[in-house]
Image 1 (cartoon, rainbow, N blue to C red):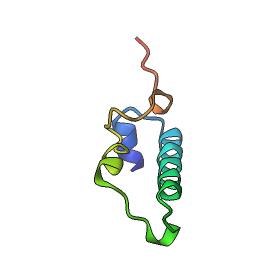
Image 2: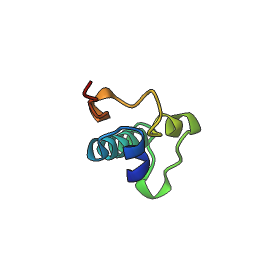
Image 3: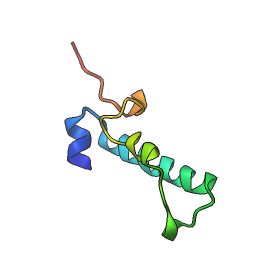
Image 4: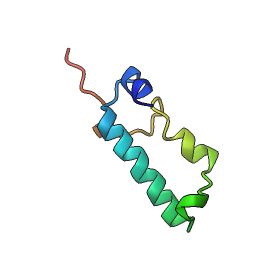
Amino acid sequence: MTETAKANGLKVFDYLTYVLDQMKDYAYEHKQKPTQMNFDKKFLEGLFPWSEKIPDDCKLKIKR
């Protein structure tokens, strides 16, 4: 995950924090136990490093 995040121009720590927070919130909203989480495919696709849904805070600033 870390190498894919780097390859997609993301700040690794911020990206991983975002992913874990989103997973925690999803489980809470869907009343799932941590040991029995079932995630929706579209939800997971939104967490991929190349997803357009990743917030700008997770992206590296490119100097021009």
